[in-house]
Length: 138
Image (spheres, rainbow, N blue to C red):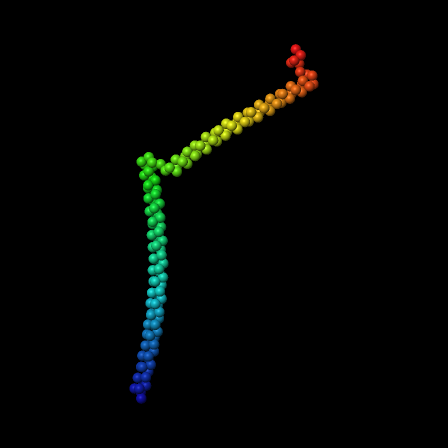
């Protein structure tokens, strides 16, 4: 009987060990599945990042090539037609501003002369009305 009893105890210990091993293997299996899922998420994010980097690179290449073309055109004496138009418009605006200033000054001088002339005319007329106009009696 003791041998059966010892055997049952040994079998129970072995069963408990197997259950712990089975539990550990199950946990390991779940961990591996979770790791696989996480790796898939990282791969997806990485692929999207690569797409963004590729787009950014093409934008930079385009911008750099446009800047390089512009620099080379300036180096060889070619200018951007839009810059020429802009400079011409700025010159025209400056010229118009100068003409505007001159016309404003001329208008101010005209108004001042007119005001002075009108005042002098009124003063002469008033002197004449009052009989103080001695310039004609002499």
